Length: 81
Image (cartoon, rainbow, N blue to C red; front, side):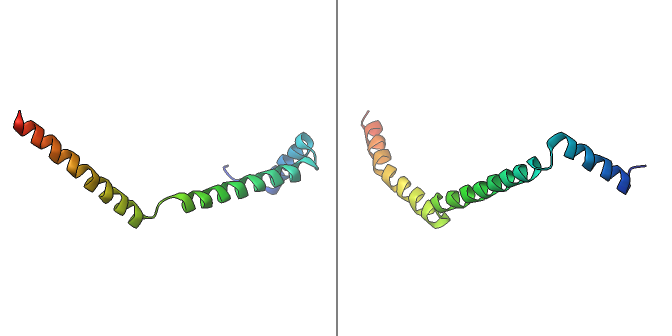
């Protein structure tokens, strides 16, 4: 009951060809292929721009050391008050 025979698939194919036309389907598939290619290119460019894990750790360590003197000065001001 859940499986389709070859005749069902042929009827579906004929209906699709009647609706879209034989020339429009290859154009549609070409546009889809261009979209997939552009998507893959975008993912590849995104990986190139993203910082490497070692660089990210070095940057976050640098941010912590930059904030240490500020925190020390704030603690001194609180101690004076």
